[in-house]
Length: 270
Image 1 (cartoon, rainbow, N blue to C red):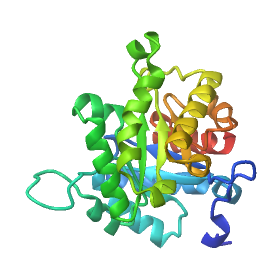
Image 2 (image 1 turned 180 degrees about the horizontal axis):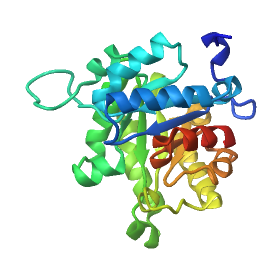
Image 3 (image 1 turned 120 degrees about the vertical axis):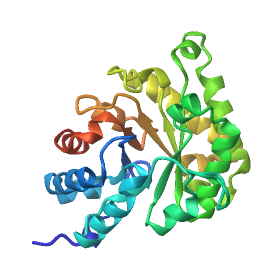
């Protein structure tokens, strides 16, 4: 039987009223043919109830976006297409850059901005990340704004200070009326790709503090609606522990999303 897309729309969590979002960040992996093969297998491994439990986003490299857009449309796959980055400029003489309006034309729904690898390897500042988030919003998409502390900052007891400094420029510049569309991804830098995720209890405290900070700056109603993901060595064994936290509404998954069997099990376990 052909699945109806209308039947596969993620429902809001009854407890929070927020729609869960599980995102796969493929980073610089897979060509467009490998990308098609992966999503086709993933789609057939998932059950209709998995799509109703959470929105599933796929963030391939730029070179696979058009191929996945066509695949999703042709096979009526209810995945949401995502991008891993964009320029803060809409157009111009910026060789090698990809603008938010270009991504929007490809049917992209979410764009990751401020990933720790972008901040560390490409020296992106929190102010630049805020401009990128605004560019994403102006193009009709939703930014996934990554924030996270390093091992040294964590050891020095600076976690909250670092997270609020990274998030503040976004809250200060983003249109308040559209802030519900922002997704905040808490990704402790020391946990990304390390094989060791943060302790769920600690993540619960930190995400609660993030939501409180948003509420303090923009009001409790906004704080209650904004979605927060956890990312950093997420796998089948720990996904459920994070998704049951009151202030975690989803997961930003790296390596595990490159294996369709593992990613499908992760989504089902969450």
